[in-house]
Length: 203
Ligand code: ZN
Image 1 (cartoon, helix red, strand yellow):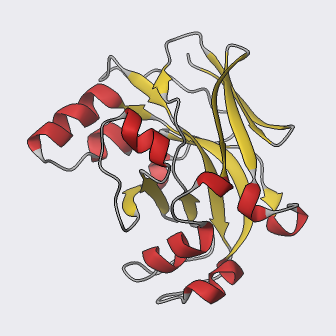
Image 2 (image 1 turned 90 degrees about the horizontal axis):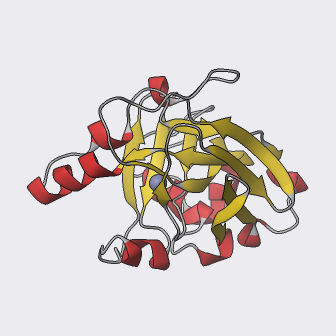
């Protein structure tokens, strides 16, 4: 199982971090060990002093493929969730300044959180899925798939040019504006439309 992530897929988020707007999706990966298993506590990692949440829509790959054409890409995922791409922002910043890979900021154990799955067939409109994140009952991030620069089908097709996609792979599709810090004791809750998808306390 692989976890793909898209960087800078929302204009407002790219700008809040002072990044350029890319033409192609920016793809990075997390290993299987990055996935926080259900009923497992999330602990603040000891190597960072600036842990950021990034709330994102997540796709579940349901078919094996390579070199997938965009117009057929919708056949390769069957469910959507809301998750968090946890990021050690201080470490990422250092890596970026030095032009180095940023895995140690992004791909550590338990840095990928996913909520429950909603079958694509049950979505009213996958081109406009509203999702948001609350921190300590306060709204901190809000987005919609309608605001993405690269939609689900484009992302799947693009990734498949470089990597085979396999059943069970996950794709974090990028975070909207409003990323920020969390500390021990914070409670995070992600929603898709009006439905709570996950709750998590930083331990
Ligand atoms: Zn992200």
